[in-house]
Image (cartoon, rainbow, N blue to C red; front, side, top):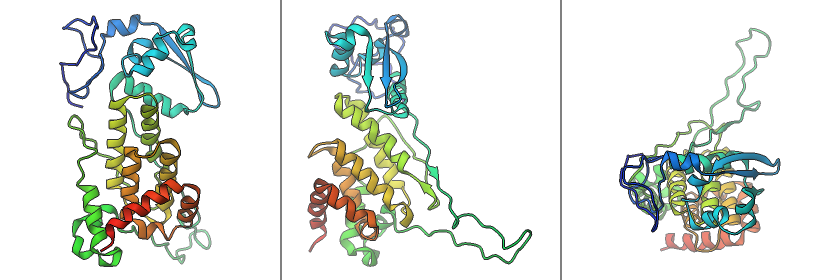
Length: 303
């Protein structure tokens, strides 16, 4: 991220003008950036995380700055503030580590995809040293949202010009842009790369940010997820990854949510491929809000 020595301060903050920032970040950051000294002198807070009740410790000085709800939780009159101990049983360990990483540095690491190999991916000769076995053909990618947006006139086999127009609207959108970061996601190149964990790592942070009103984190996680979806090469075997993402987002957000809007827009661009996936119909039945939003978005493709 680009460095910025000028950070907006909350009213009443006593941080000196020559204080060393703990992180680089958005130029319009709206929360206080304390000094290293202030952070190290702040009291430790223990977080009990996930089903396994893993304990993590972080400085209150770096956490109370991120949002008013977090400040009340840790510095107010609540039980957590008095005991210096917070239980987040609905957050997994990896997500919490990324949250703390962001709190200290204003950025976080992206999860790596799982590589799924089965009999179709592994070549075994008919006998030792045999060279007669036929090589399996690699799974060919479907038309990605980037492909569809390149030339709208050429997309007649993938839903007509309307499909290309909608894809172009998605790939050229500035709704999820951030001026202070140039995030380049990892590009998948094979159907065996399961991107569920990649998508989820951004969505989980967005859910935390939404719950605790942490605007900079919600904007960053949405920006990273958008960039990942825009670059994602769609394979038939990976369509279910997109549907799992839609389920997660619609299960944990409310009507009108911005990430919901982004997911629905993306799904409308690739709906022809979604309909060929058995999971698609199960998702529509289980998540009526998603079904309704997708149908509404699809009407924009009608003449």
